[in-house]
Image 1 (cartoon, rainbow, N blue to C red):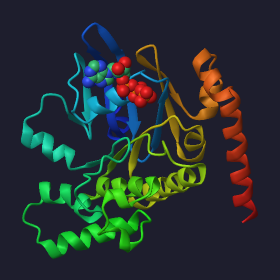
Image 2 (image 1 turned 180 degrees about the vertical axis):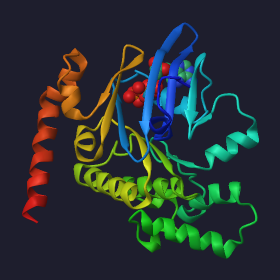
Image 3 (image 1 turned 90 degrees about the vertical axis):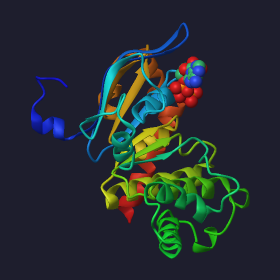
Length: 274
Ligand SMILES: Nc1ncnc2c1ncn2[C@@H]1O[C@H](COP(=O)(O)OP(=O)(O)OP(=O)(O)O)[C@@H](O)[C@H]1O
């Protein structure tokens, strides 16, 4: 995509977005947006409401056709692909949409089996049940949750069930759209820990849209900031804090930002004490 980038660094990029332009009618949401996501990182994506975080994710996963720009995932261009090629790429990622997006008429186990049946139609039912049971337990749900319907689950359990479905195909890349929204602080911290531990054990790359400062401090390797229709900065939180952009300063140094630093420090100290 860029001639100047050396091959090794490019191999290390799971997502590359260049010159992205998106809009709806007269409204331009992205204009000249660039973003790299590195293999094995948890990248937090932040920005004010309506800055186009979800539209960016939808563009990367092929649900939104950009007006202009290039997007590569796993080194493959994802825009305008033949359906069979697009399917091969889609198999390699999992998505947790805002709110979990579970099918309400299916049980948790059946929800997890949806992508398995779509991509592997010949798998027999016993194996499907077994894989679903494994994914359910892997996301910290009790095995008894598998035959339950979404309406019988708490908000946190629904998120975990959504995550189990996102992990159904053993993806390398995970998209999480506001995974802790609507969870109480304890549930949100537990979900963060789950994300971090799955990322480590499964070697995942994670694209994580969030408004949750605690999540950024607790588990994100780098943070990308969307503003002015672009990614205006990407880096670790200390790197971002060194910039004097007003939104970044207000976001990280406002009262909620300072509280998140305090809770991250307290958490680290508690871990040190064992
Ligand atoms: N299908 C659509 N049709 C028209 N406008 C849309 C559509 N999808 C998104 N938009 C507009 O694009 C802009 C960006 O939306 P998006 O949902 O990506 O924002 P966001 O940064 O994810 O916001 P939030 O943090 O509130 O979830 C908004 O102004 C939204 O109204």
